[in-house]
Image 1: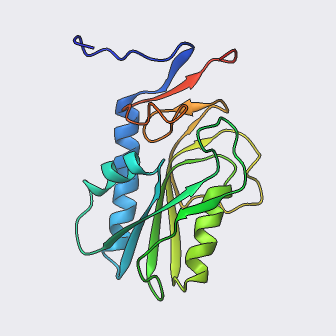
Image 2: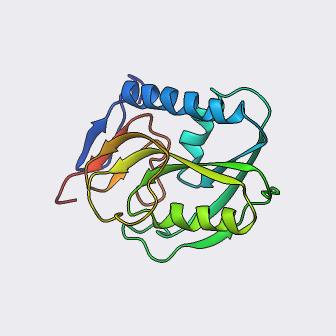
Length: 182
C-alpha cells in the first residue's frame, strides 16, 4: 500500500515485530560467524521457509564458507504437515565439514531432524542448526532442539519471515498469527 501499511489476511495478528526479528537475526549471525571463522563450513538453507531468514543472515556474515540449499516439504501449502521428503537434497560435499543449517521455525522438529540426519549420513563432521522461531509447546520433545533460536512464538499458525500462509506472505518483515477462528 502507498502509505507503507501492510494489507494482511483476515484474522491476522502481529506476534513478533520487525525490530525483534532484526535483533534475533543479529544474535544468530554472531553465533554462526564464530563457527565460520573456525573452519570449513557449508551454510545450508532449508527451502522454502529458510529463504528469508537465510538471506537476511547471509547479509550479516563474512568470511569463507560454501552456500548450499535443500528443499524439504511437509506442508505442500496446507496448514498441517505430513512426512518430510526431498524436493532437492543438498548438493555440496559435506564429508568432514561443519554444516550450518538455517530454517525458519522449529515446530515439532521433524523437518530439522530429517535434514540433520541426512547431513550426518553424508559424512558431515558436525551439523549445527539455527531457526528464527520456535513454537511454545511440548510436541517436539525427544527431538534435537536447534543450537540457536531467535525467539519463541505462540502455538498458533504463524506466517511472515519465511513462514507461509497457503504459499503466500513469506516476505513479511514481521511475524503474524491467525486468530483461533481463522
